[in-house]
Length: 322
Image (cartoon, rainbow, N blue to C red):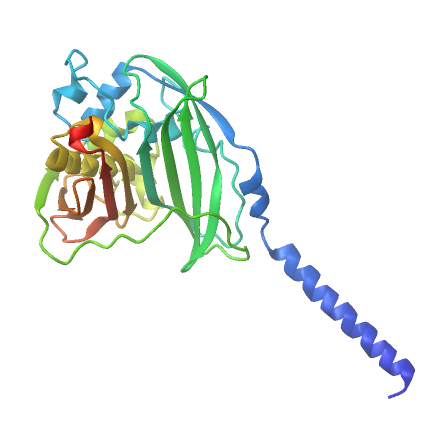
């Protein structure tokens, strides 16, 4: 080829490479900027009645959680997760509620459906048990490729006007089909396998057929939990129990078994949602104390033998240091 032809080919090649680079960069979702953005500040509020209603919604009959005049009355330790839905509203909310949508997250390409994946709830200080207004600061912590989609993790800190932190919460979702993004931020998720030996404790708790009707009053008004038509649109044959309701029942069973139900001993809990639970089914919580302060667990549906909550770990404060 002549120099002119060579120059033309080189020019075309450079243009082609530039096109590929440009095309590639424009199809990748910008995740990093969302992670680096300032946290959203969400005003949240609750009162004593809210604490009582939540405790009843997760099957508690313990006077420390269901009777406000009990000398040891306290907020059940997992209650704050509801504030990520409830916000400061005293009434019924549309779904998704404003508090749930407050944290800015990227619109990932290819997403078919979003699933609740994992929760981590860490108590820093005891919650007040009277009418209280707090601030929930939330931001996107990380987005990482997992299997057929993306694990997205939001981190929240529940604090008062002085900056005192009461709780830290990690809420992870799985975006099925998500593509064209680069891993960014941090991941708090870690693998916790249930031991092969028989559990030390097996606690059963039956889910009342109307449990979802009660639990939704704590802030999660997603209609698929009570409306058969909404459930079918969501791909379920019948309404399913809230994942957070199963989380509450499970935490209650574990705390009762290893710490006498004492909220002061609760430090943190983490778990993954593995499969749905139907109203009327029985949860079978299998518990393996790993040490004086760490407890592994998983929850199965007794009627089907399927694991509905996996990757379970509760951390406790030592009994002697309270």
